[in-house]
Structures are given as structure tokens and as C-alpha cells.
Image 1 (cartoon, rainbow, N blue to C red):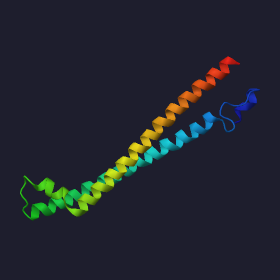
Image 2: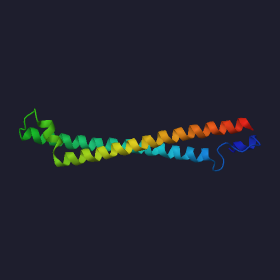
Image 3: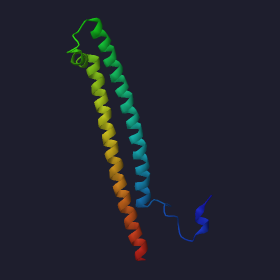
Length: 120
């Protein structure tokens, strides 16, 4: 349904206003943040699986329990999985920062639009 038919004024989000562009970018950033969270969880699971496999091998190899955790964390496949997970966490943090930045911009644009609207 076209809601503009009920008003003589154009819709607030019609066209390509600054607020509309920020709003679309915000929606995209929120989606990217969700995808980054999913990716970080996937890489965390890969790391945990690699660590568990290294742990099982360490038990079989009779690595002392006092050093087993460090031993497992220093296995090459576990190190690589941990690096991938850390990179995924960094991407998640970047996406979250972008969401917060766009949210701040959107709030400022909405406040400016309200100020302009009330001034006319």
C-alpha cells in the first residue's frame, strides 16, 4: 500500500535523503555484524574441535596433565585455528563499531531533520 496517498507531503524516507542513505547503510551494517558473529562462532567451533583432537592425542601420548593445555594450544593446526578465530573476532568488532557509528549518525540526522522541520 502506498501511504503517501494519505498525505500531501512526501514520505519521510522517500527519495535519497541523507537520513535514508544512513538508514540503509545502518541496516546493511547490522546484517554484516550478524554475519560476522556467525563467522566468529564457526571459527570458534573449529578451534575447539582442533583443540579437542590435540587433547585426545596428548592423552594418548601421555603428555603430563599439568602441561597438556599449553601443549595442545601450541600444535600447528590449533594455532592456525586460533588465528582464524581471532581474525573473525576482529571482523566482528569492526562491524560492531560500524553499527555504532552509523547509529550515532542516524540519531544526529534525525535530530537535524526534526530541528529543520520544527523551524519551518
